Image (cartoon, rainbow, N blue to C red; front, side, top):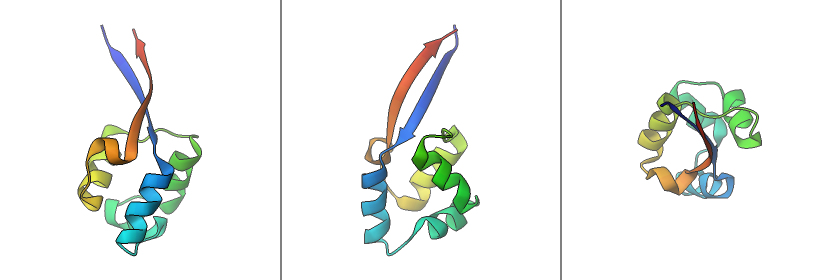
Length: 77
């Protein structure tokens, strides 16, 4: 059985963490090696961050998973 987990970003929490670091979305994107447009797509819910992106965000921000992410749904295949 394979589980497909969709993950969302807690936008308000992310904004607060970025503000404490004096960063914006562009700075976060630069630090994780992605474009700022992908961060925007994640925040709008149009894309879901991959495990690789989530790990890079957590490392860059120095926070825990549930500080900025939440599970939207789990599909069993």
